[in-house]
Length: 265
Image (cartoon, rainbow, N blue to C red):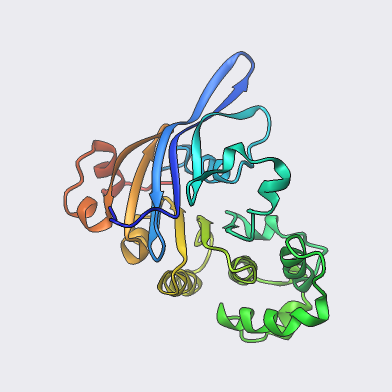
């Protein structure tokens, strides 16, 4: 899809879940390439494996799940061979993630400023809150939160879903992450807020960030993404640039997703 070297390359990734004698192959041989300054969309219906794939990239799979094979190469280094301590140095700093439900990902009894501070402090033990607040304010303004002081002093439960999404984006920006994984970043948001979040992803792309957009919404893909992978039952069934796939979808499942009459969850 791109002639440059991928910032992040997932190679033949397999993540299985073992439950009551059954093996569920949630991700079964997935390979994707993610490039600087491009938005790569992972598209699929509910249960297709796209969210499990995103969690596998950061090795955030808990039992009964297990990553059984494959590579996750960040600048050529396989993250799946890293220790947990080494991965903590990658998560947030080099690869940031917006979880599907940010209001749940954020601790409801911890103020936003503490969330942002912890995102920095985990990588810089000498960081001091007072020295960081001006930068936090500027970052919140950058993601469209016009009252940064109020937001910093707020608890997540006092903010709307869209504001929590922006806080999650801001937490990725304060560490200058190279890759942002956005898992359904516009789900359950009103149309105005959805548009604002998508505009922010486009700004990040223009600034050179590599963005992985996990979604079931082809309209969102058409508006924002450069490259796309279609996933079904844990396998990639089609890939290409957004223009190529939309112009000539080759796989039956891709055509099904594109059917405007069908509602996809």
